[in-house]
Length: 76
Image (cartoon, rainbow, N blue to C red; front, top):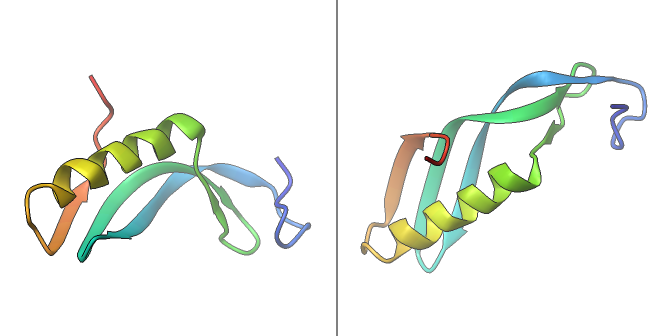
């Protein structure tokens, strides 16, 4: 896929670190599957990955945590 940001690079399978904030929580998720532009580094997440990240931030926000760092895990 051609990068929509730089319009020069092609994306390849890789990983990203995603930071989400919600209700005073900062959630950092490492090793998230993504397509990454080899020219500018822009990261693209699939809809299913994004959906899982949103579910995770909802769960963690309900625990009362302020900061949480974890590795991405594929939903069972």
